[in-house]
Image 1 (cartoon, rainbow, N blue to C red):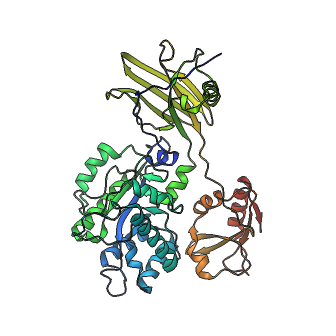
Image 2 (cartoon, rainbow, N blue to C red):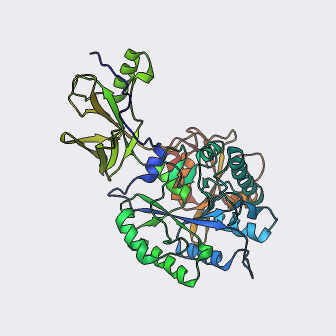
Image 3 (tube, rainbow, N blue to C red):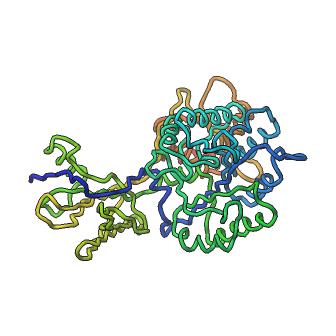
Length: 476
């Protein structure tokens, strides 16, 4: 049956989101606790005293996070890595190695009040140089690759997106634009209100109003501005979030988990279809493209994520909200609800399983003016592209009552203690996302802490079973 698409001239204003952003911005499901990312800004070596190479306020928050097992992320301003401050570097490396804190790129320049614009409001070349300089210093001085970015005291512009595109190791962007190809942590609320002041009462009010249903919240704070009173406010906020059942994660850990979670995507289409619209989405689109002779003849919004909170899917150029949708999980199924507000109320429901896709006809007008909604469920899969010609060495050893894992590319030389320690994570759940990135068929060699040691039997068995499940070859 012939189906025709025509491209509307000015019909919709829609947000196009990447899958990564969709996962970050989603709301909580019935099965998942809310995730909190502590985005703590402005790490430098300024103010160090006594045995601490950083200010007492930074030392206090680092100690609190480790003793309370509260995962957090600290933003390093790159200029602080220029001088050879061994104690400062050891402090960062130690926190990184123990796994409670993830460090990220907070720009290079230490902005002053007299600076007219922020570091990421200027031209492309300057922004790219600042990002690359901090990345390079972190690798050279710390042996750490920074995988997230957030600007220090600066807005961003289109050149920021361009600059970040050229740095693939930066995979996450705090408070970036929703159409970024990076994994974006949106700004919903912060720890401080006003800035620098963690106020528990204001936080609770805002959290209940705008934050409670979100799947993940990235909460910004500036620990070096917290005196004793403000510090107590921060501790009260953490206690409050814990009382709500929230869990704290590093940005990378959350991104890895979000990438493996199923997601329902929707796309608005325009054209004609005389069937009942219960057809294969991709086949229908491909057929329309073939008949039109050009992909440009197919009008669509781009895939958008659905979540338990209603999201606007389609709005007219005049501002009228016409289509809204949401999806909720019911075990292994997803219940999608679409509602409309044009001429008369419209409501449609459909249940989808994993990896399924459907097309819903939402209007019944003469051709070519009908509106359709394409839906598909993607079972999240971490991108598996990492390979090593000499396989991978997985070091496993007990320490401090926990099992540590360190995954390194195979070489012809012995790994140093420092190399093994820097790559270490605690617990088998923490090493699984790293194994998930390895291309199927790769070889993994199990080791103890040292070459002469054997990996602990029970943990080695658990790892071997997981590797077999995801298609990796284990060599004991």
